[in-house]
Image 1 (cartoon, rainbow, N blue to C red):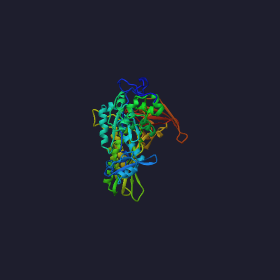
Image 2 (image 1 turned 60 degrees about the vertical axis):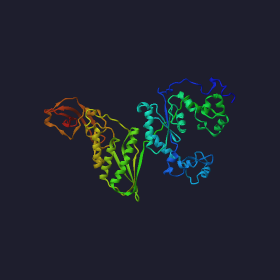
Image 3 (image 1 turned 90 degrees about the vertical axis):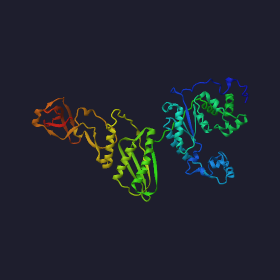
Image 4 (image 1 turned 45 degrees about the vertical axis):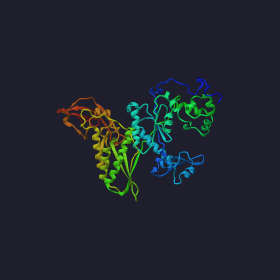
Amino acid sequence: MSESAAAAPLQHTLFPSQSPQAPKPSATGRSSLWMSLFFPRLSLEVLDADVDARPWAVIDEAHGKQIIHAASQPARKKGVETGMALTAAYALCPELATEQRDLPAEQARLTDLADEAMQYSSMVSLEPQALLLEVGASLKLFGGLQALHARVAGDLRQQPYRVEIAVAPSPQAALLLARCGMQACITESAALRAELGKLPLAVLPVSEKQASLLVRMGLRELRDLWRLPRAGLIKRLGLEFIDYLDRLLCDKPELRLSHKSAPIFSASWHFPQETENLTFILYGIEQLLPRLVHFMRLRELALNRLQVIFYHADKETSCLHLGTRQLCRDETHLSTLIRERFNQEKLSAPVLELVLLAAEFHPAAIGNQALFAPGEEQDTDWQQVLDQLQTRLGEEAVCHLQLRDEHRPEYAWAYTLTDHAEPQTHGLLKRRPLWLLSQPQRLGSRLKEIQLTSESERIEGGWWDGFDIRRDYYQARDRHGRRLWLFRNLQDGAWYLQGLFG
C-alpha cells in the first residue's frame, strides 16, 4: 500500500470512528435486527443413518479433487477435519465411511426449516446451510429479544439438528458470527466493529486469491481492515469486497429475497406390513392430521378439499376424497369426517402406505367467538353437521337453494349441490317471498277478501324458451293478515297467488 495504516489520516480510513448510537432505523421507522440460524452438520443430518455411530464423512468436490465437507464426531476424533483432502482423511482413518454431498436434500430440508421459521418472522431468507430471520418486527409480539431467542432455541432443540444462533443489526454480520460458532447477540450497529474485529480474516467469504493477498499484506484479524484506506483496498481487493464490508457493518442497506412457502402439504405414514385393519389405518391418518393443522396455522390458511392416497402391493393406488362446505382447519372435525367416510366405503386392498395430501388452500377467516354465551350454537357448528350428513349420505343428498340470473320467479332459483362458495344475498329477496307455491293458484272469488299494499311490478319475457309470460305482481294482505305475493296475468286477465311472505 502507498500509505501505512498508522500514517493514514482519520478522514481517509475505511471505517471512521463513530460515537455510540442506537440501531439505524429502517424505511418503516423501526430498527432492523437479524437472527441467523446456521446448521453446520446439515449435510450429515440429511443422511438416513446414525452418522455418529462410526467414523463418517460427507465429501464434496473442489478444484477437481475430493475434500471433506463435514465429518461425524468419531471421524473428528481421528483427526478428520472439514476442508481436508479425502486421501489425507483415509490416511488418518482407514475405516472412514463416506457419502457424496446431497445438495437437493439439503435444500429441501432447509426449505422445511424455513417454513417452520415463518412463525417467528414474516421475513425469512435462505443461505447455504443457514436461515436469516428479520426479528426486529417480532420483538413486541414475543416479549423481547431474550424471550424470542429462548423460544427459537427451545423449538430447535426438539429437532435433530445442531444449530448456531447469532443476532446482529445486519444480515451479513449475523451470518458471519453464526458460521464462526459465536453465540453473539449484538443489537447496536455501533458495536459491530468492536465485536467483528476479533474474528480472523480466514472467516471472510473471499476467493483464494483475495485470501492469499490479505495474508501477504500482513493482516490477521478484521480489525486490521478498519485502519486501512478505502481507496487502497478497492484497488487491491475490488469494489465487490468493499461492498460486502459496507453491508457487514450496516453502512449500506441490503435487499434480501423473502422465502415464500409453497402451499402444498404432503405427509406419509408407512405400515410395517400390509394391513386392512381400520383401527391401524385411522391411527396413521390421525398421526398426520396434527401436522396438517400445524402447517395451516403457521400460514393462516384453511382448506375445503383433502385427499388420502393409499398404496397397495398388487393394485393401483386408491384415493379417498374429502370435502367440507366451509373452509376448515379443525383437527377434530376432519378426523370425524374421515371416520364417517370409512363407515361408508371399504378399502379395495390391504394398505402398505398412506399419504395425506392437501394442494388447495385459502386464507383462513378468523371469526369472533361468543363472550357471554360460549355454549351458544354457532354457524360453524351447523356447517359441521351438514358436512357429516354429506359425508354419510353422499354429496348429491345435501343440496341448497341457489339464486339464478333469471327474472321469472319459477326459474329464479334451483336446487344445487354445495359448491363451498359463500352465500350471496340478492336485492330481489327484499321484495319477493322465500315461499313460492309449486304452481300459481287462481284466486277467483277470493280476490274480494284481498287488499293490495304495493305498486305493480311488471315481469314479462320468455319467448326464447317457450314459457312466455306477461304479469303485473303486487304485494297484498288477506283477511287473516297474511302477506301475499300475487299477480294479474295480462294474457287472460286472471289473478293468481304466487307465494307468501314469512
